Length: 233
Ligand SMILES: Nc1ncnc2c1ncn2[C@@H]1O[C@H](COP(=O)(O)OP(=O)(O)OP(=O)(O)O)[C@@H](O)[C@H]1O
Ligand SMILES: [Mg+2]
Image (cartoon, rainbow, N blue to C red; front, side, top):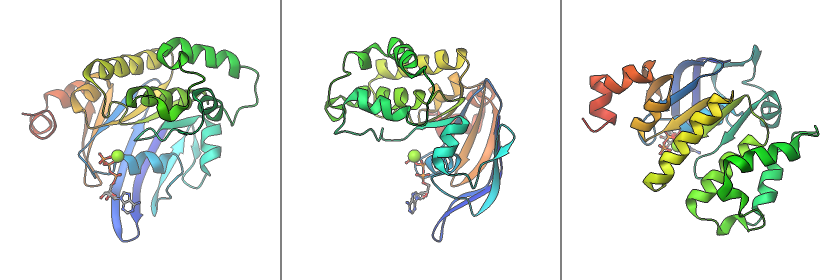
């Protein structure tokens, strides 16, 4: 579904991604684990068209998208729940969700909103609330809901569990599984390596801009190097 080949991304002179190649097949959950500054957010931002690669190719469902504008990429079926939530704090929860559907002109937006709310009852209860007054965990859920409102084929999740209490982390990862079971392909970026590998069909390890390892979630969970560096030994 998504193929990334030889991707190089720079911020000025700073090299953030070096010759990154990976693929996400339809129906998969693919996780990318890596430490702070490894380039995880850079990768997702490049897939979403928010950053332009210096070199390399990104193909989504047979179409090259490394030059495609971000709104067009959403229309093609890729949406992102960004790191740090990035919700519109001065708008209501409902308005944030409406914005998530801004590329759509079909008549199913209202029924999709119901479906999303069924999955996230905590968000439903707060529809008229100003989004900035929600708790961190609620804002994280809202960011995911907003991404779902574009009806993505491929959902990009940047550290969905960041800053959440353990019970909410469990909830978020079970929602990831449910969304995937319902047919959404997911590319997930996480520092919570154990959870990210448990939920993943396949995963990659990103270290200072390089993919250093790839395999099934299970393989990486038992890999000695991964254990030592990311799973606390
Ligand atoms: N706007 C920017 N300008 C300059 N350098 C940047 C910018 N954004 C990121 N970088 C650098 O690019 C590298 C990769 O950053 P990135 O945010 O992709 O890492 P990350 O893996 O998402 O880290 P984290 O786990 O902390 O979110 C880092 O060295 C970072 O300092
Ligand atoms: Mg990041």
